[in-house]
Image (cartoon, rainbow, N blue to C red; front, side):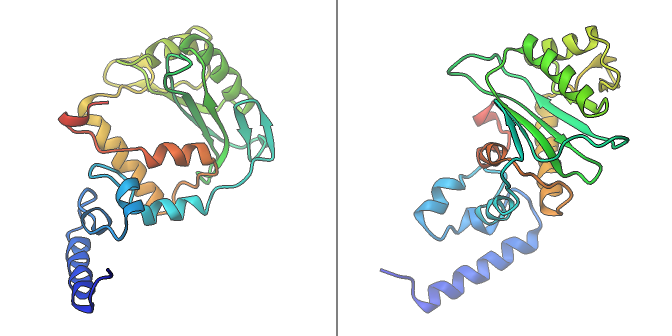
Length: 219
């Protein structure tokens, strides 16, 4: 049985109240879902709402070249500046995937990797990918995770534009419990404002599963 006009009016009023709060973690799509599919996609701790995911899905494009798990939307241009963000995994068949995204000056995705790769091999892969894109500034999630191994490999290979943690003078980006939600909020805001344009359907899948860090859902 459908909702009455009064129930629709109530939902719309409550959604307006929540939107006015301006809280990234309290959104109308989460509190007043419209259907079972939305309820499934958008759990209580999800970072992106269904409407935001639909908007991101419209940016997805087919790559112009595919080399295994590495997809390309734009080949490197002479003199252009790029940045690579990477997250390493252990490379187990049933485990998480290692991932990398390459952005140009306009923060548009030009290449991406998503696949099984151990942290040592991933370091060698990133070294090659970064140099291919004009010695791109390379940021890999390092300590305390498995990415510390990948970051060490990049340091040992003398990668010319490797990000270092300012506070600890170590290669890679240090991800702690306090910084997890800060990073996710930065991702959310950049996507909302259109500052970053993703092309990879595999990345979109990961964004669907992105949740706010709490003590109950430690990642």
